[in-house]
Length: 298
Image (cartoon, rainbow, N blue to C red; front, side, top):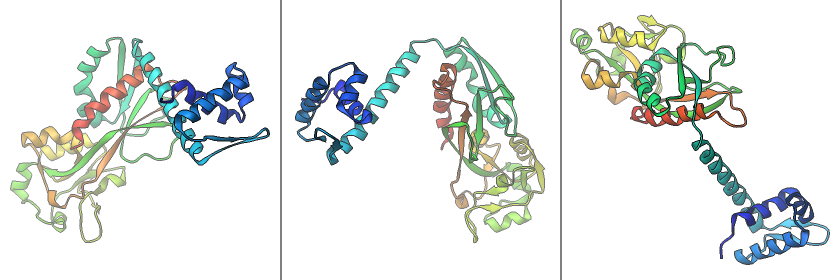
């Protein structure tokens, strides 16, 4: 015979309450009924879970093992019931999403139509900002962050990751030549960011490591601006796959020094304030966009 969920709950309750009598009082049962249930559970499992005397009880080694896993199973059951309950409801209301402009344009906007068809009662409000915002001040439900997260009181959920590519237009490479070694970048026009210094560290292996700090010849505050500069043949840029995969497929941009790329992937996270129960409209969007973003993690 196998242990039932009510027996798991009884056992966990005994341990957490500290005694059989306290667990019986909490569960509205008699101590003798709890004691009999505990004995039946031990008989099913073929082992002693608790060493009991009139004054104290102690978990055996098997009891400690069983207690931790029983708690995890019960928590999973609670979460499943909560998700099923949420599934029966209809998500609705205004959902305010904030992201940097490139991510909004390339990774969210293309899927908006499908999301609205699935959840017609959710009213989307899409805002772009390349700087870190205050969620409460901006009345934002979800903010998408690209790159490593700083310590924060916000709740974060990973949505995946996106590789970084060093690339340039065919016209630029035809005019200036294609660099074959990392050291040859010094003779090229490099496109970089104005504000975030870490974004000017390209994932290229060289004699001093696997990240190359570059000094841009032409700077911009937005990755989308750098993308358009690269498309216009103004130089070599390092940009995320989510915003350049279509350009690469169409041949508008080409990989540069691909064999030297260290393979670094930018983390993509959703950050939000989490209450005791995450709003259904937020949960629906996070599940939806996480699935869609899987195509960018090449």
